[in-house]
Image (cartoon, rainbow, N blue to C red; front, side, top):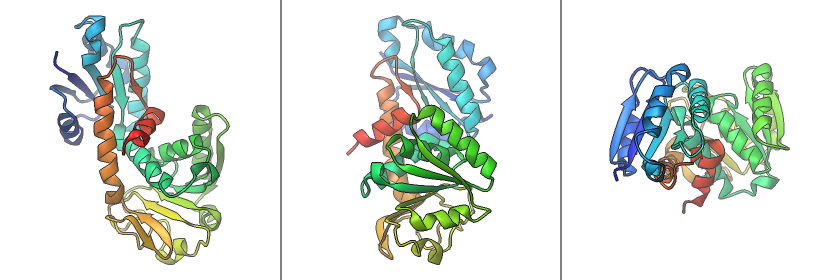
Length: 285
């Protein structure tokens, strides 16, 4: 029986990037829908659920994408509400590449650090990738400073993460008030996950942190978030700090994305959210 992936994209035009990855992951048939909203999702989900018997539903899966992560989360919530009993299919949410990128970044950090003993600073911590990177770090026992231009937004992000991670050790801070710049002097890990073209620290700034061991910059658009890190850096040592750039993390992100698509077809009960996608990342060689 053919493996069918149904792409539910919240943007008007379904992502060509996600379509290519799906094909490379071995999907037999790809059905793509754009402009998907949570309130209108039920007929599409029913179409996936009721066309095959329970034993064959593992061959149908849903992928939620698009540039609006909040909209993607809302679609995922509505999809899960539509399932009942054995009538369900596996579903993956990766709007804006947020979950796979965050998982790849934390996996890179885990190669060099014991996360349970790590104090981390996530710059752009209220954005799509930063929020999820902070969530994953907290789930691994790290103490995480979540930085935003708005302290109020940072506080809300910490509340959101605490709702997913019991016992999370989180500190909100405002980069505009130089709180984050001050915090970075005491951390072992910095992840810059801000918007394209936003530079958080110059080269002297992040290199002056004597405790810093790993720096990860996820911005591929000049200027990068951490000046002096090249987008192609992959475990490159600079001033005694192990550095990763966006492309250096990107190869792992692609492996995680493809592996997660493959996992969807192992059963009809997979829900691949932030935590589940990180588990997949860590299972890869």
